[in-house]
Image (tube, rainbow, N blue to C red; front, side, top):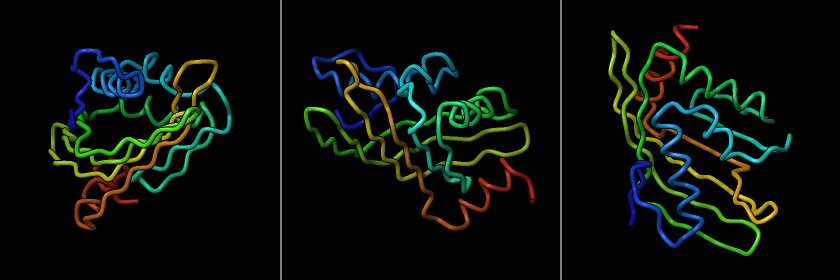
Length: 150
């Protein structure tokens, strides 16, 4: 498997299952399951293409709340990834593709993505996410659609 949409069957790989659960939650707009994927600590960090670094559960939850309750429909799938493992942490690095759609605009997304998970009491929990859009025109189009012309 080198594509994750969130619709995959569970496998015997607990790390991949954790990532599948995240994309299922994200792509269905399930705030509770999305945040359950994250560690319940204040040292978690998200760096996203809108230029922000969010720290702690409240700031990260606000990003997802804006996505899930905003005017856009957002769908992403994770592909061409590499999974690096140790006993207490794993990192998964690859690409996201998908769409950001509003009534007025549709943007085809292309994002470099990494996620880091910690094993906390036998459960994999996300502690870091980084996403970058390499194409400057796509980044500007995405930022304008989400943030306006600020």
